[in-house]
Amino acid sequence: MIDAIFSAGQGLVQANWWMTLAWPVLWALIKIVVVVLPLLICVAYLTYWERRLLGFMQVRLGPNRVGPAGLFQPFADALKLLTKEVLRPDRANTAIYYLGPIIAFMPALAAWVVVPFGPEMALSNINAGLLLLMAITSVEVYGVIMAGWASNSKYPFLGALRASAQMVSYEIAMGFCLLIVLMISGSMNLSDIVMSQSKGIFADKGVNLLSWNWLPLLPVFLVYLISGVAETNRHPFDVVEGEAEIVAGHMVEYSGMGFAIFFLGEYANMLLFSSLAAVMFLGGWLPPFQFLGFIPGWIWLGLKIFVVVSMFIWIRATFPRYRYDQIMRLGWKVFIPVTLVWLVLIGLWMQSAWNVWK
Image (cartoon, rainbow, N blue to C red; front, side, top):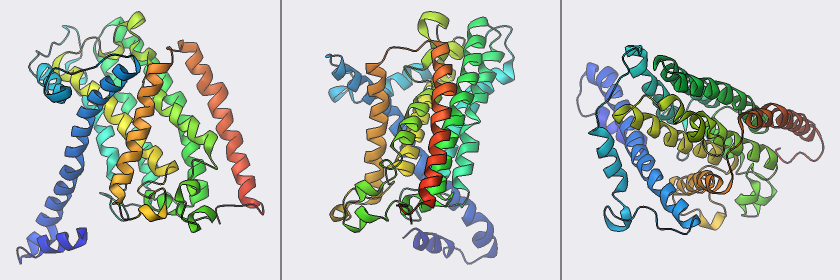
């Protein structure tokens, strides 16, 4: 269907400049808008869902004033931040100060270029998709460091130092988790990784749910999930912006749209890590049972992302904040050894007679 639309657009003007230059560029922009626009709406409503779910867990209502059941609250918040003045500290480094939020937010959008929404349904279905994702997501920390340093203030600088150490620490464990998935699927292409989860003893019997990677790689899935919470600086790992200690961390000196972009970046990252968890471990667009195959794949992917992102909020409502030294110990002394041991075990399992990934 997508190829048919592309071919129809290419045939609109019978000129070489249109078919070779103008239409491919326009087509790429259309695909980007089709992915980014719903993504931004999802990010806005993720803030609403978080407040409603936290309200439910804490036996209160949550946002319920703006619009029916408070559904227009995200737009009211966005409008409030848009109309606020953007203040810049006198001694701040102007260029880096304004660039920081953009560098922190853009990778969260750019990484969606390789996320598959269905068979052959990705903006760029490249073979090194997993490598590209790891490269793009590792750039986010630079935005936080730039914001903390350019603000020329103690609290933002402390927050930036904490963020850089924390994100680098947990990126190693996440990298090993993705390496294990790469080992068993034999491909860096995200579509191939999803399709590798549609094969197996249980999939042949119509129960796809038990053929997905979460079951044989359960410890790895848990490490990836918790590392994702730490990587996005979410509670209980949010010492980067620990209100009781350093106010708002690297965002202290930001107001208006600068603050809003950091805020959007945090929630966009939550959606991105949830989508990766769904693709790597939960079968991506595949239905849990064969008889549900008539439902479009993108709906299944959306439901899985919704479940994983709700787990982020559930963790926030349940656990107290870790001390900074506890966070570092968990990353270096627990998660990295666990993933390394599991890497060796999976390698031995694949070489044995009980290999379930043949």
